[in-house]
Length: 297
Image 1 (cartoon, helix red, strand yellow):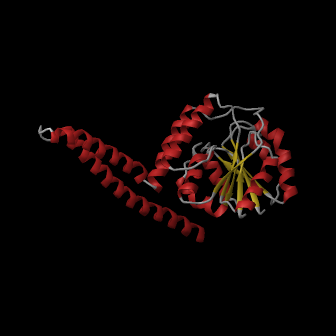
Image 2: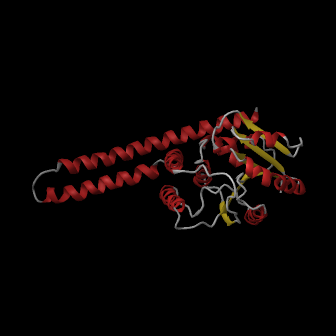
Image 3: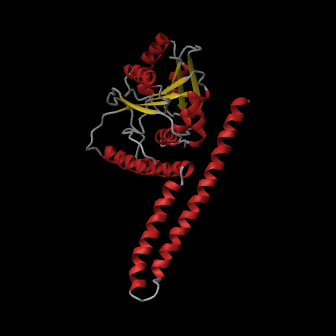
């Protein structure tokens, strides 16, 4: 496969010391391009990367300041010249052998995005948070993906670049780009991968990451399919108003102010949803046209 591997790194000096030689040797043996993005690290990550001998198959991208996980991946994609690109984390948890599993899945299914699904402790706090995010995402954008925010994904480069302007620079990038593929009706496949426990460093995922992800999921739904939010709200208010008001009218007690307010609110939600749908189509056209013009330049 014509492939580039993107690895965003932030303060991963210990992991790079352990894993970098293996990554380089593996990519060279396959004829793949390795792209490592130093996202403004404050440790010795930059020194370690600068010591790598210059090569056409190894690209180092430097951020002067920390811009975020998503921003690092976006910078990596700017350097990709291959048909497919794979992202993996710099903490050494993703097994190199799993890359072959993702490639095999893509070749067998012609998928546009292949997600490496991890097996985690279902009783951990982080697992509970992911379950909440997964439930919200399925409510807003129907999908069967179990590991939305997996860091190991195999992308069709042209499609990934199409959705990059829609994705945040934060850790929510992983969830949002997956939902972008799904919302735009691309083929997304999930396949199990092998992971190793983190041996060095510390994860940057926290409670704020979860809230940020939920907000970004709502934003992406509002962009692709706002009626998914406004139509159920409209139906709830309309049905609630009718159920509340009809018995009062039948009993001859006039019209309930509360019921009328609910019915009017339902109609307003429907109208706002239809307007949002039109604005969504216009915004999508502007974003994608701007992206295509930039690529042509």
